[in-house]
Image 1 (tube, rainbow, N blue to C red):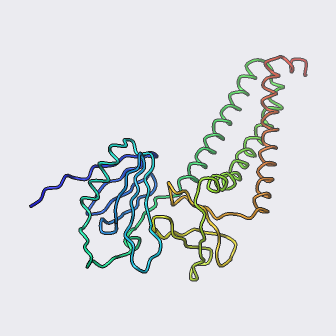
Image 2: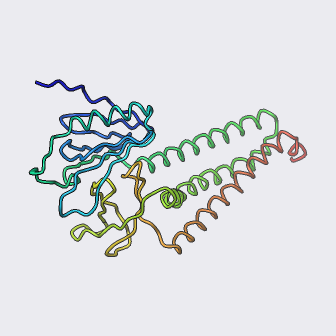
Image 3: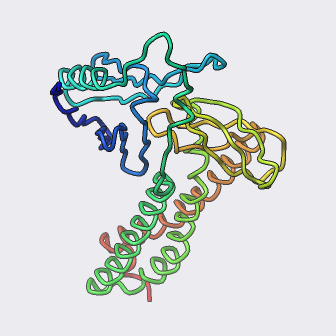
Length: 277
């Protein structure tokens, strides 16, 4: 009976953890995890602070799928992890039938983190701005410049919601800019039985779906290789220009109104409203 050392847990950037559960590697990110059976793994490579998990390839497959874990906390731990996994892989000889490891990989996504984080930041910004506006009104009133509130209240009342709306409109353009610059672009094909839903395969061989409002046979999407579930359909140049104009106008109007409210607060401190009836 041979005794093998357990496979250590691997910690990486972005709160990524790789561990072994029931003869499978679990690549667990904050909002998604992938389950890779050991029988689906060809080998594991450690290159500095990057660990690459290569999947087995069937004779009919012409593409090797890989799962990469970036920014490993300790390079020595990456080497130890790769050696331990390679030692635990099932033995294969020339008579072993090759399988396509991508068919055995499964994934589970909790929710869309980037969109939720964007909304959370937008709500917090609106709340802080509203509290600041209320505090400014109270302070200006205590200073004996109630006339300034004639400007502060309406400008804040309209400026803050418009700024929040502009931030909401900015999500897709900013997300698309990031994915075009840092992501992987690929084609997604329409599912016949589900209008508006398209399917693509990421670098790790996981089949994923994405929604798109414009009906067509295929679309181009971009996803984050470090977080493959973060995906967005790419817009045409005309739509990107239109969205940029919409975001710019909305944020511009909001900034002008909010700037006017801030100017009224500064004016109250400087006594500009003392002469008003």
